[in-house]
Image (cartoon, rainbow, N blue to C red):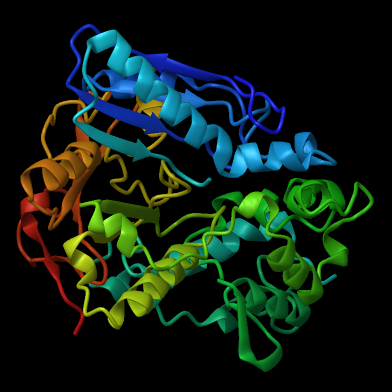
Amino acid sequence: MTTEAGTTYNFGLFLPNEWNERFLAVGNGGYAGGINWIDMGAGVGYGFAVMLTDTGHQGSYQDTAWAYQNEESIVDWAWRALHEATVTSKVIINDWYGQNSEYNYHSGCTDSEHTILQSMFNVIGDEVLKQCDPQDGLTDTIISDPLGCNFNPLTLLCKGNNSTDCLTSPQLDTLYQVYNDWVDVNQTFVSPHYLYGTKTSWNTAIGTGSLSSIENQSGFAQDLLQLGPDWNYTDLTYATVQYGDKVNPGNSTAGAFDITAFKSRSGKLIHHHGLADPTLPTGSSLYFYSQVDRDLAASNTTLDDFYRMFLIPGMEHCMSTPSAMNAPWYIAGANQAAQLGDNVSGVPGYRDAEHDIILALMNWVENGTAPNSIIATKYTDDSTHDEVCRQRPICPFPSQAKYTGSGNPDLPENWSCQSLY
C-alpha cells in the first residue's frame, strides 16, 4: 500500500470462514517490521478477522537502521501504517462478509564507567530473590511485590580482601543507579528504574561495559533522532532527552494522557506489564496510568470504569518468566501464544474470561463485566502445555494477590485480591 507521503507498507489480513463478527488488529513489538503470521493465527482461533502490518519496513524489534534519514518511514512506524491498514481492512471485511465488524479490538506489546561485570548479575539476582521473596508474605521463588521490597544492597559489598561474588564500592554506586529513577534538573522525572527481579536480560539492557553489549540501545538516538551512527551511549545526557521530546519522531510519544475521547466511545482498556520486565521498566506503565488518572480527576471520572492495569509478578517483557522464579505468566496476551507453539490460540485448557485476557476484554466490552482478576498460568512444560504447574490471580492495580494462608499456593482459589490500604 502507498501512503500520501509516497512511502509504502504491507499488511496481512486473515478472514476466517467461521467469523465471530469482530476485528482484531495485532501489533508488532518494539521497532519490528514484517508480518508475524503466528501472532495473527492466534487471533483467528477466536474467530476474529485479524490484521497485522509491517509498519512500512522489514527488521527485528531492535533494528532501527531503516529510520535513518527516512522521517516519513518513522511516521509509518509510529501510527500511519497501522491506522491506514485498519481502515482498509474494515473496508475489505465489509466487502467479504457483507457487513461491518460489530466490535473492534487491538492487542499489542511494547510498541526501550564503573561497570558491573556480567558474571555478577546472577549474584545480584540471587540476593534480590533471597531478600524480596519472603517480604511479600510467602516464600515461593516469586517476587510478588518488588515495589514494596526493602532491599539492602550493602550485603553485596566486598569486605576486606574478598573480591569474589561481591561488588566494589563504585560498582555498588552503579547498582544504586539501576534501582533508582533518573531524576534531573529541578527534580524533573526522566526515566523509571528497573525493579528488583529483572536481571535476566541486563547483559543487553544495561550492558556489560563494552559498546558492543549495549549498541542495540543506541538506535533510537542514532536513527530516529537522526543523530547518526557515531553517536553512542556515552553521549547520552539530559539534553539528549530534551531533544528527543522536542523532535518526538513520528509523533510516537505516549504523552496524551486525556483519553476521555476513548472512554466516550465506550472503549475499554486492559493494560498489563510484567513486574520482572528487564527490557521496558515497569515504572513506565505505572507512570502512564498515574498520569491518566490525574488528567481525568477534574472530570470526576473513575478510572476503573474503563481502564484497568494488571501487573504480573515474575513475568518478563510481554511473556515468559525467569527460571529461578517459575511464575504464572500466561494469560493469552499479545505475542504470548507463540511461546507455547505455532498453533496455540487462547489459554490451553481454559477457554474462559477468567484465564484469557482477550476473552476478559470481550466480556467487558460486550457484556459490561469488568475483570476483577485474571488467572495467570505456568505450565510444567510450555511446549506441550498439557500439565499446569502453577496458577495465580493477577489483580487490577493497586490491589495485589495475597495468599489466604491455607491450601496449596499453586492453586488460584487459595489467593484473593486485596487492597494495600
